Image (cartoon, rainbow, N blue to C red; front, side, top):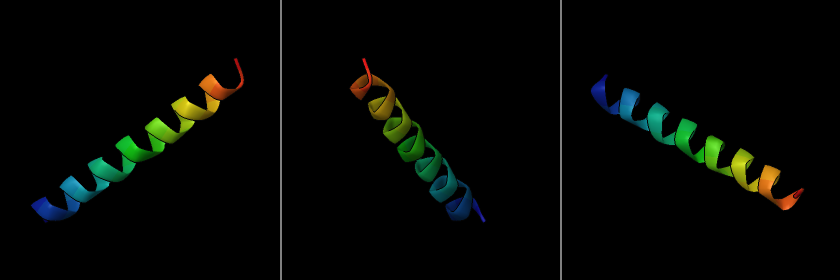
Length: 27
């Protein structure tokens, strides 16, 4: 269960990084 939480946090961080890169690419 702890591993799943850690995996979800990693996926959320990756998604946030992708969204940030997408926003920066539009500047």
